[in-house]
Picture (tube, rainbow, N blue to C red):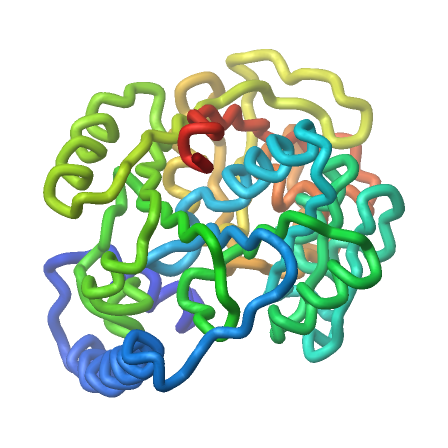
Length: 339
């Protein structure tokens, strides 16, 4: 187990003890102070975000990855594309090999310019699954937005994972919360999963409770609680299994089949739970989040392999015919969230 995976497990254990966790809590004090200081400077308008000539929406998290943000970003992009808008998604490009100090056009909405290894799994998945929507990566979101507006004629911009990136003005801040994981052990990084303290709730315009389950009562109750306590319009996003398909030929895998499940995502537990309902899982293999796969990782696995769609975009280039992907169906009231 890598140090990164070990720390992630600590984030969602409320009974943490020991010297290692105590050390992390010391670092969390400094992280929290830095985060609060930055936010205070923006709140007091000592620092001011830069504006661009487009409508900017941020879709972000209070916690580290695995909340289910990417499919929500995709649904918002589709909504605007269907309205005839020229849309771009701006991502930092984490996990990709492109130099993200530069503006990298992964897709201009028609042409795909980079593979998953270079672009990163999430930007590549978005580029492949969205038509007429540009996808760009750059650590300088302002520079990427300017490029999208001036070179690609973009009118609507979606910041993928942009809530803590306060250098850029946004017209709408949407934040997602996992109905199962919530805020973990409620510590800020690195001792916990929180990217900032709870004072950040005052910046949220719309809140989405992501229900990664086939039963949504808990998420619906949480939605009502958050809306009442925080005074923020809150919605439920339902994420459910849709199908399991072969990533080479598209054929569906029969339910009840014996499979090996593999993943390299932030919080894979719900992925495994979805599979357990319909398949006999012989083994679960979990890699670090954003793991760059090599053929050696899977060549010795016999039988059917099921992975996530974000992992599948990196595995498809190997040409193995025994790999399947779990397709999820994401449902929420996009129009109400955006209006």
